[in-house]
Length: 60
Image (cartoon, rainbow, N blue to C red; front, side, top):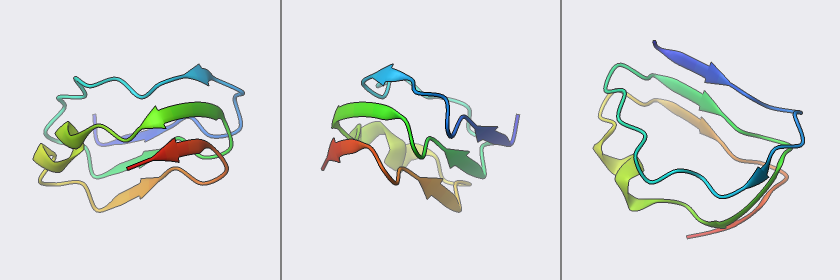
């Protein structure tokens, strides 16, 4: 899997710490109801070029 687009879904919760799909190039979690910290494990996704978190309540 290379793309995850889950924007505009009203998902509530925190981002998981164990996103481990090394082939991901794009993740979009924009316009949901996510809160908490952005996991530091995102940094191991070396192919990730786009990461959208707009309109959530995240920190980090």
